[in-house]
Length: 132
Image: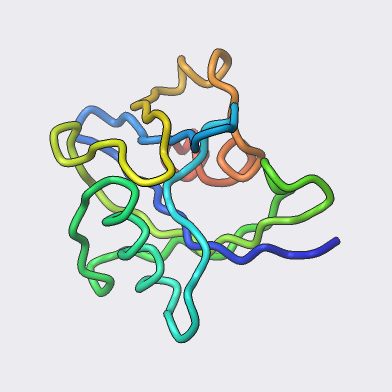
């Protein structure tokens, strides 16, 4: 199964909600982030993607590494996503939909059942945000 390497952000707000995004032409919500450009570190990739997708300015050195996680890709059948994930905090007024994003949502554990989520978010990243 081919791998797609990405950087992903687990962004939480002061209320404990987690930001998920949906790209144009897709149905599943996922953590913001994306694929690296040549020569970028995982943190540099994420900082660039957060600026492009959400208008956030993030110092790559300020990102808190969470690890590397593997799941089935949400939008590329027959592929796996290999995500280097980072944690950071933000508030609702610090993010806006732009670039290829169609929608963003701030969710709580109560919203998970009613939100179509990417496997990576559901299996690995949201549980990091809301430890049991």
